Length: 198
Image (cartoon, rainbow, N blue to C red; front, side):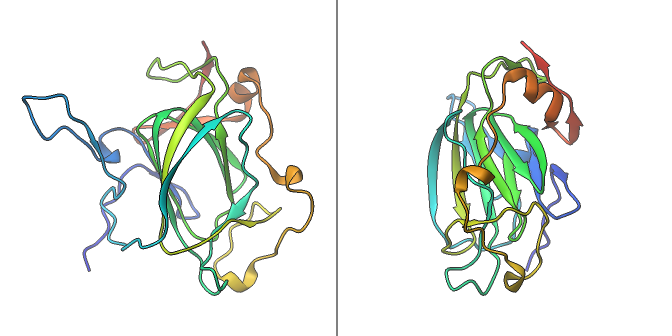
């Protein structure tokens, strides 16, 4: 098995955000404006779960969750490509804005949740958010959303503590652009950067 190419910014829990050329954005033909976005980013894993997309706005706020196989025996990894717009992800309790064209590798067992970045946040490259984004996702194996109140990563499916309360309690909070500036950061290329208001 080939070794995995290290790209992007890797966190202590194994999740990674990749922005820039490491996000595997290719222009294979010099005679046309065709852009390819690949989900693999050099991964050696074989993904066989669901593949799809979600269109987000700021009212679509997922509850915090992890992914496991449907029998709850194994944790399952997820890959997300932010196709256009800017998303916000909470990974293990930290909030990040995710720039267009970035990949997020969410390790199975690391609690995460998503929403769109509100309008009016300026990214370091000058892009200004509009309150929407589209994600393309792929799971390592068939899975579902397993809600959790905890932000602490787990390393085995048997450690999962199911959340049975009102899902509104664990949804990504509604944030204004000003709150995003004070609470979130962004990965640009391989650096963690601050944000500002447009």
